[in-house]
Image (tube, rainbow, N blue to C red; front, side):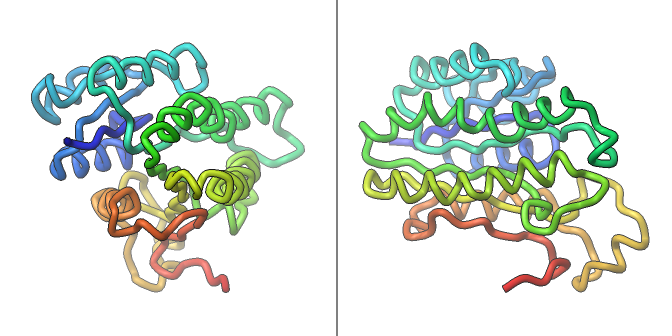
Length: 236
């Protein structure tokens, strides 16, 4: 039986690369994005019996319910989830408004909670499941210019550990991948110089790492926040 994966924010960047990688490995896919481009993208990934698209936002609970219901109606199970989102407002911490912080909370943190409320009972019945949250190195090394993202991703890092401990006995795993700079975003020469590898990562490298973490090859890896940054940050 082919495994089924849900991927959010899947129409471009790391989400799209992950969808392509998992499709190449034989997954059935249900992909979601706010953009209507998600429908044409799903068509590029494979035949309609293996890939379907849901247009919606991770911040809308009803959209997440449609996403899960679509996966169950189409494929009858959910084996993997890739939680991916956009970016919240930027700016100096005290200059940001309450609504900016609430936006970040909904987008980065609460979206994962809401989707896992829906998916976890399914994985419990299956006695197996794997989740990867695409986060950011800012969860561990906060950025002054991105206080909302840094704070909410730190919260997600802790939730990753809590969830993993609670559901390990059901053989449900959760890890977070914390990319540094990747080629889906432009970087300055100063940023490039700060990366010991002398280059940014690629979205394809991100996708292959996620595919590994979802696979049985990573069956004993859970509750981890894995930095993917070419040695840019230095932590024990």
